[in-house]
Length: 315
Image (cartoon, rainbow, N blue to C red):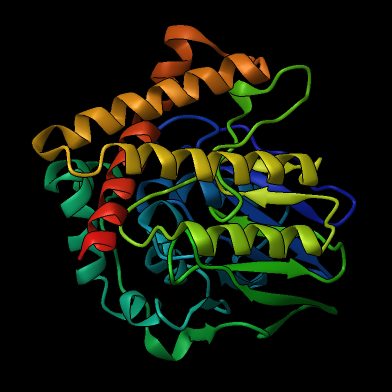
């Protein structure tokens, strides 16, 4: 898969090859001969990640950290497999998610509930546990060292309660996982990027997501790195779009509350319409059937997440 060369801050994007090209990035940070990986993709993608490290001239013993933004399997599924290959690495994960890295059975079960057992096994492969002594539980204010650099941890719920972002003190850049939404390069138009919220089940919280996005904006980063996909600039504009779309998604969900068995179908159609309108409004680089095909899985997962959120509001 295509991988970017490191920028002036030693940061590069590895295309993991998860499901399709340019869907799930593993970000690599190199400082003073030491390296960290932000997120991992899934077990079937490990050979791609290893090949990318070799292409960068990195030995496995140089990897000091795997930094998980959260424990959804497209971000953390390969953590156990990679940790068995990286002799000096420690795994940083939100304190809410650490036990699921030691025993991933409930994590796998939750994914099966969303995607089904066959698709889960085919897509995510084997989910291996991580030895507890190699896990570092992180939360708000944690500071991690990479070479002579430091990375600071921000607790950023909204997409999930176990979500953190990493602020790289050396560059001022932020590794945001899914907190800053998804931004597929196929949608770019003349270098202008676009974003959509990630309202994945089962812990979507729009108020918390708004707050987390604002925390990132307040840092005034030159760049934000999202797992889906890669480096973003023009952060204030993208943040405004995220806020607007989070509210639009929530309004769509509330519009179908109480519609019974047709609720999922109606919300799915509403979200598809919202996204098509966004494509027209913003003049996305991909439109029509090609755009709908690219975003089909995201529309479905966002529908599931919003339905789950509706249920929690009424309980």
